Length: 132
Image 1: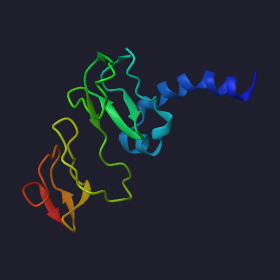
Image 2 (image 1 turned 45 degrees about the vertical axis):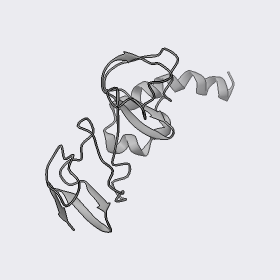
Image 3 (image 1 turned 45 degrees about the horizontal axis):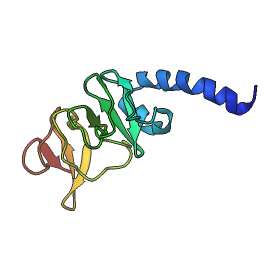
């Protein structure tokens, strides 16, 4: 068996195994997750897929369609937001399906903010954040 054949056999096993990782670890290993496929693939709720190098969680079971990309179907996918806990990312508006959690840090309008609440969908400076 060639190395390529071995890799092709191991890939599905790896893609299944990484689904059990927490989000922080998952974001360190995005390339191990299956690429999103819009050609009628059945996706179960809570699995993670990558699309354009970004990790998304499937919110509800569905059969994929080309027009339901993770970036364009917020009822089906939620972007995993804090990509690297060591890097403070720029704040982006989350939906109710991918809120910031207490302790998450972001930058916004030139300042660094820390969420003081779980399930935070508010803009920093409005509610649920303190400036650090």
